[in-house]
Image 1 (cartoon, rainbow, N blue to C red):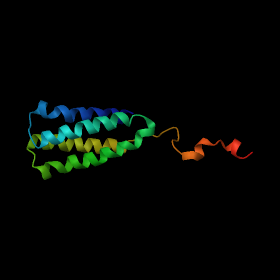
Image 2: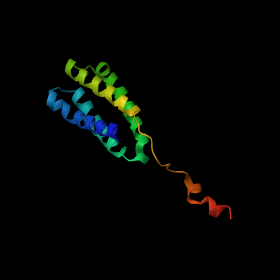
Image 3: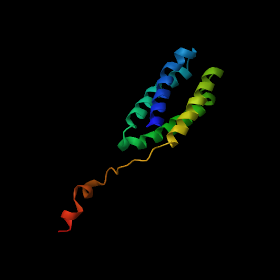
Image 4: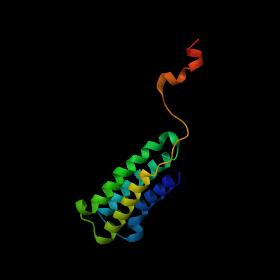
Length: 117
């Protein structure tokens, strides 16, 4: 759960980072689009049944690593993008084990004792 909490904070940082660090487009637009996505997915992925959503952070992190070169960022937004992207990728790989099994379809509705009678 702590990894999702940090991912949530990183999503918030992506939203406010352009104003705090004072950088403009295209980095500002990119961060303001990705920030709510990262924060929203991290918030939802706190619940064990939604934990696989954390893998989207891996994709977002990879994009943040590539974006400075593809979109032509300045130095400050590039450093910010690289740090946040790397952290998101590492946090996506740090998933906690779920203690319950979710899903199973219709077979999970049938109790094995009742089914064998």
